[in-house]
Length: 158
Image (cartoon, rainbow, N blue to C red):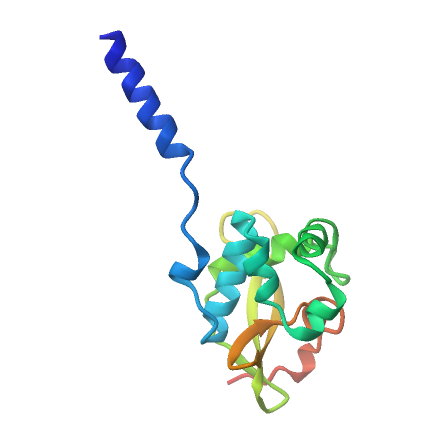
């Protein structure tokens, strides 16, 4: 009997220690929503290489490496609401809104996200726009426009 208990405990421990699924297996950058979800998931699981590659060239010119991105997401806050960048990005996993063109451009879209998500109904909801731009045939997240130069007045409802 003790061997069975030890075997069950070992199997349970082994199952808990497995690596999370690869981001590339479930997300790509062919659509803005999938690109945003891939970034959110990669931040959630700590895949900073994929997260960094999900950013626009302009954002990567400001955030120089995956390590800098990790530090940025932990310490930086949205200037208007004081919400950590990491919290905004991981909340995007629950995105329910379609992309909306920005200023009539097809290559730049905004996706609205609510912070906090439905798991914290006691907190007031804040609507934020995460901006994405198509570069090199793939959608990439523009953290500069999202958190530094947010242009909500340019988001045209569909």
